[in-house]
Picture 1 (cartoon, rainbow, N blue to C red):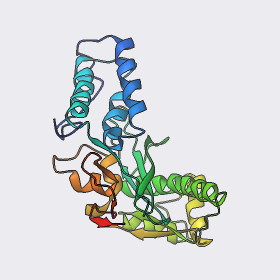
Picture 2 (cartoon, helix red, strand yellow; picture 1 turned 60 degrees about the vertical axis):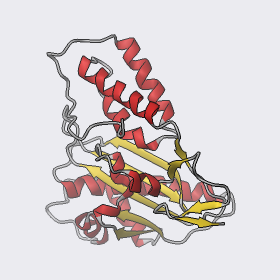
Picture 3 (tube, rainbow, N blue to C red; picture 1 turned 180 degrees about the vertical axis):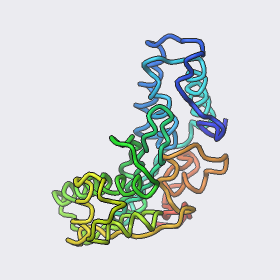
Picture 4 (cartoon, rainbow, N blue to C red; picture 1 turned 120 degrees about the vertical axis):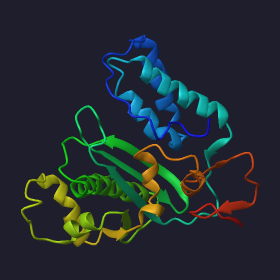
Length: 259
């Protein structure tokens, strides 16, 4: 089993499916959620299955069992933290527009790297329905900005100081909205609390930068990926911990170098 979830999987409520033991299903989900602390590669699949804990069906249990089989197939994977990594902060963000088949809400997905080390990541459903991909990405960016500022403040207690922190987005439209101080018809309906992203951009706390979709690391938290996910995993500092030799670190794209 080479991926935690098939790209053809489309889970829904499956009301006509056979019901399964809710207590056991929740126990399985709880165990997997605990494991996401060291295995970000299963984050999306686990969160998707967790949506159906109230009334789990056979199809949901099969999806969960696939995650367990994937873990059994890849026990050597783990997060790699290099002693030679730099201390620069950057955050990637993406959004899955209307990805939830229950209420059509979008999902905000982010990951933050300190140097080349993954230090935080999340996959969280947005509180309101986004009318477009641009809006979904803009809302995700606002949420990501608040987390980034918290991380910046926390690290300052350890004597680390940062200038403008790059926020890497693959939506040029969302970046344009954040950089434009004028409220247009298309953005007037967006809750004002999300516009604090624009405020912190103007204060130069963050720097909104475009990243091509092929290099968007947060993409792994938005949907099931094809079998060839090794590049994305390496970029997230997820390596075969048993085969990473001592005295070797890796850059943001998994290229080994001596330290």
